[in-house]
Image 1 (cartoon, rainbow, N blue to C red):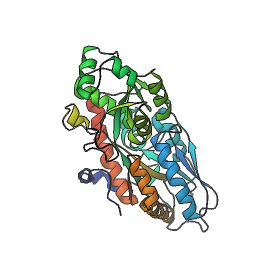
Image 2: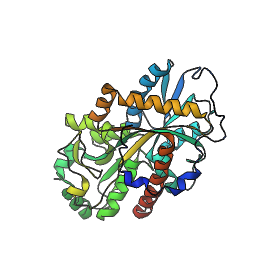
Image 3: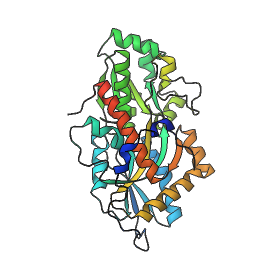
Image 4: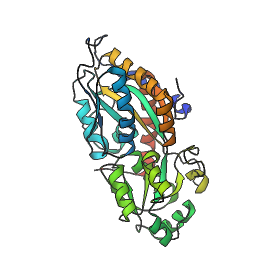
Length: 336
């Protein structure tokens, strides 16, 4: 099994994970003939973002493995809560899945006063698909005009001009949002946050000059960085990314010691989904991400494929919930 893309030390504090109802009260075996119809993978963000990119990369591989169509269905809104809630209320028959994120299953329960779903009770974790660093990007024209060529330049300008910079995100509660809030808290700066319904529309406004900067998932920002439409300053992970090895981490460039605000994406099913359906989905996802073509494609986009089994994924989510709850508290981020 490929190694988890996330620091394994985070998996040590997992005592709370034992209460996770991986399969609810599901029968031990699935109905014969599953899947009997197309399987829907709900992406809780707009098309074009990293969640969407990963779902559309994995869907055809699963379709070939199971001999049935896997359809990606974008349901954006409320930092991923709209799509997640829809899957939580869907039939637990293996025909509706969620491409969940660190936002829907690690951040939102600490950030929102009330969620329309329970991230623990309403879902059966299937597999962690990939870990992804975020990247700090600016509109190139704005960066040149403001003489911001590095993270220290950005910190100096933001401190001297509080509220003058507009910071886009893919939505309240996403790791993109929290990366920005954590950066503000750690550097003593204030930038105005503008949440969008996904990375793609936020990037359009950033490229167009309506927004000044953004912390985006690397896969969705990378094509624009390579084309020169965006100026990248640093990645938010603890280590540099192999996809952009010359780009420093924020901890290196800031310096902002210990800064780490990476993202992850994984498949989840409604609670009560039959155990063997969950197992088969994880096994075929692992096989798909281990194929040279898909693995190379994901790595080239800055994503690190995983494929961990359901129980380990449940433990990982528990650890991430604790971690991001602390980040929300430290950053002071709030969503009404």
